[in-house]
Image (cartoon, rainbow, N blue to C red; front, side):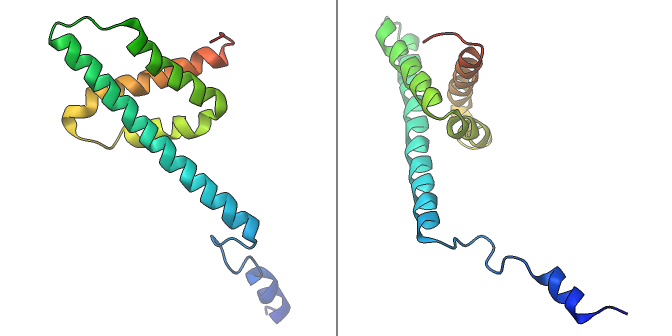
Length: 125
């Protein structure tokens, strides 16, 4: 026979799972969402920037080192600040996007992963 006190103890858990209990927790969640939205926009801008560079190459134009370097600087700066967010975007965006944009997104993802590997190995900027 099961005692009522045992049933109550088993069911006694957090009542409002997934909902913040404090105002400070709500602000933290809001900041994370805003940060993720900003990071998503930055990621999309990087893909667009790479598309423009590749278009210039297709047209036979010379691409300056500065254009490619600026993309590398953005990736490095973000990874130094918080690599978890950007790496999660790599995972998310490997499944999203148009089929014709796959090469560009893949190239940005490979750059992000390679930069993260270099930073983790102790290479300087």
